[in-house]
Length: 426
Image 1 (tube, rainbow, N blue to C red):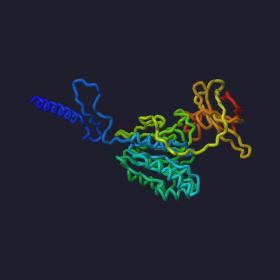
Image 2 (tube, rainbow, N blue to C red):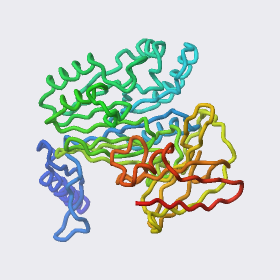
Image 3 (cartoon, rainbow, N blue to C red):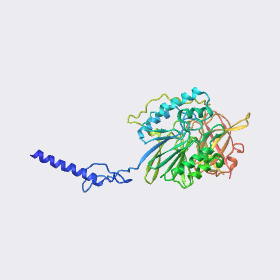
Image 4 (spheres, one colour):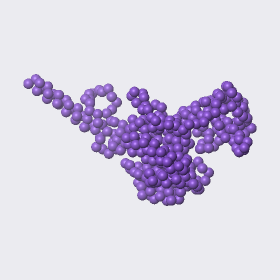
């Protein structure tokens, strides 16, 4: 009898716990936070709430960036396993998936076979977007069409519109959105005018060009006007956020592509972006792959080979940049070599100055210095950090220091350790 009574008491307690869970649950209310935790609650409890940080409409998708353009061994292939552990609903890309730049059909096939072997290991759908390495010439366009069909397309998911564009149209339309694609985009957006949010993916940040009517981006932005949207690109191998038309355009770093890997300050790191879609809009999270490790702290091995890079010997170069004798912070100092035969300058290395005007230059990999030789130095400063052709902000220093053919700044790098000083005038 005692056992029977105890059983009834236990059942009553469990029933009370279940009833509590149900009474607090809002899972049946569309868009409301969920409560799926089953726990016995008292007058006072050692937790803040039982409402989970999710609703029926929440989801996460991931974006991988450039794999190629001097890709490094074992990065992308391992990133697939790292993304699987992050468990997004699906994965999108922004192009440069193979090294390409060849008309040899066997080489093109081998490169795509290798890449497809990696992405087939994703536990979720993967969406291709072409880059200039993927569509370098007509042969590569034909091979893309044979394997994947469309070069631009769209899909919808839970009320959002995903648009994958092609910015590469060889031989004369590299870095453009052609007229046919512009018309398709306008029709696609019109057919999905009630989308909660629109996400646009392409390879190049072609809005940095001088003539946006000519390259087609003006038409894209016109079609997107008035919509809640974001744009995602790669190509530059450097993370950067552009504020345009009341929204954000994200230029991702790399997922194995060539990079000096100087860290977030330079926008140079291997990353995956996670987009957490909520009822009130998306949240963007940059995941540094260097910190995504399994329980045993060991990523699976891979036979993914990198691209060999011919390197000259480099020597440490530390420097200080001043303006009218005072330390100049946040300036990009670049060293350029001059080729007498071609009569052209080539940027060899650069560095970003700190609060004291100090900088360390990088040629191939993080702060490795520069090859010995004679250089012309340029100095630029923009709000967004490191200054290059894609920097969205205007240079705030005198323009004569921004161009190697005009700059009066000369630097000699010798074997051994080098300390240089650069002084610019207002």
